[in-house]
Amino acid sequence: MCGRYASTRGPGDLADLFSVTRRDPAETLAPSWNVAPTDPVWAVLERPDRETGAVERGLRPLRWGLVPSWAKRPDTGAKMINARAETVHEKPAYRRAFAKRRCLLPADGFYEWEAVPATGTAKAYKQPYFISPEDASVLAMAGLYEFWRDHEVADDDDPAAWLATCTIITTEAVDAAGRVHPRMPLAIAPADYDAWLDPTHQDPDELRALLGTPAGGRLNARAVSTAVNNVRNDGPELLHDAS
Image 1 (cartoon, rainbow, N blue to C red):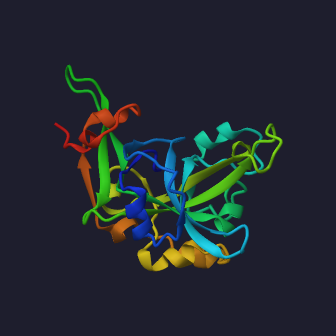
Image 2 (cartoon, rainbow, N blue to C red; image 1 turned 45 degrees about the vertical axis):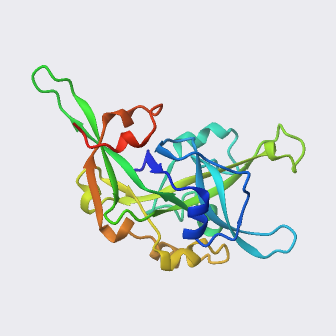
């Protein structure tokens, strides 16, 4: 799974990296070294313009934890932070989004934990590892997004009527990530951004073929500060090597 990650690049840098053509300058997110479920996160996605119908690539914040459009309550999203690549195209919660609402979730890297047993007087604890591309490039995690309508708000045009959420697609872990945890997020290669984001591209087999190992498997996993275990902690010091 992927239950925590780091995303510190600003919207200007992300817009350049992903050839974004539309973003609202008023929408901002602070850099985070400890992104957690239900946090707002940057997402790159393509949507048709309401007036012209032209598909545009945008950068916008989404809440991490997908809420299906048919869900009765929005709190279901906290349990749907990941979608398994093996079944994402057929599960009711994800299949419609997989067909039409795919996105990229930019990250510096992600965290996984290894259980360390108690020894002598030392208590058992969970050691976090930061897993990231060896060349420090951006990790374009494959994601899905969905819109949920709050029917307690009468006006469709009221921004409060809609909740935009996302999930990260995961698979069996390999290489450095596999030594720490059995699952890992999937990524999209730069050459495949267009095909993945295109909402008219709906062939499930072709789409699943675009899902790849982050950084082509060239990942680095290193033990970092246990301060990251607490979601309230944030800052670059979380990436300091474990002492």
